Length: 357
Image 1 (cartoon, rainbow, N blue to C red):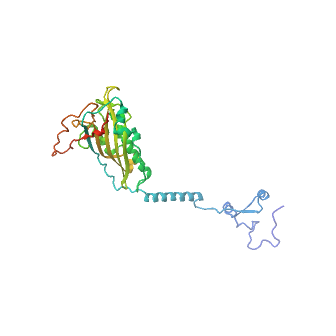
Image 2: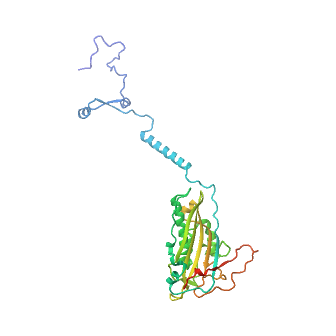
Image 3: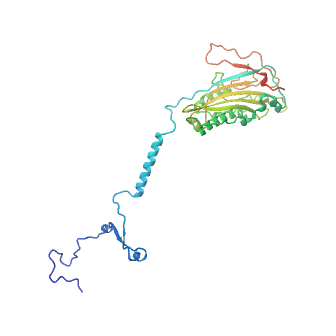
């Protein structure tokens, strides 16, 4: 059987001849099929799930970004804009330039006894018969005060400043390794790096010039002369924090520390006596100091006794022990016209500051 015969009248005028398909001009290539908006379900799909014969296909995107790419670009733009906004609206104002660290100003006042230094073998009796009877022992005597945020510093930053100041007080006046062992690192690591040169020079070349006395930085005894008769050092004092400007916190501490001492190497049966040190310290903190747990110590005022005014107390404290009296002569002669130093400071230790044995 052949193909369909031509019409009896022959091929119509204008129609393709030679048995060619009359729909030859319509080309159903692959791109045409893929672009169709309607797609016929298969026979199996129509039998099982679908009543309609066709389904609508989503339009194809040509040369555009996919939905996922558009979402990703949008998220990146939002994140970038947020970062710029937060940078502009930073809650803290950055100083125009870093201010130089202020050097420590220090005074050490030696308190001479008005009579013989009282002493006994019973250390507890020493403390109970003195004004230090109600003092707490060790770091318990340096409690943190109630604190609150300031205009430019949060609660956490204020607490950090107080904790750093407390650490300095404890390490510089209660650590036995510092008191009689010659250690300086536990204190040094708490200082702002801008003060380290002054600190190191104070111990390398001590001087009673108001800038380079080791006893202005910490409590330090001469271990060749004295030792601790009791590690239970008594402490009492106060701490307070305040904002000085938008970039600076200041903490002021005022503590009286009482030590029981006896002659070095004398043994536990030797008489002990009390030695009292009052330290008023002013610390300054910027935000870098708070972050690094460091401080600038800007003022140190120390009163200590019983001491002899004839002894140099700049490098180490050399207490007068039980049964001793102050040497005659008082402090060294000072020339008020000389420059480059400060006069020796000496006072009298009140009798009420000594134990009543």
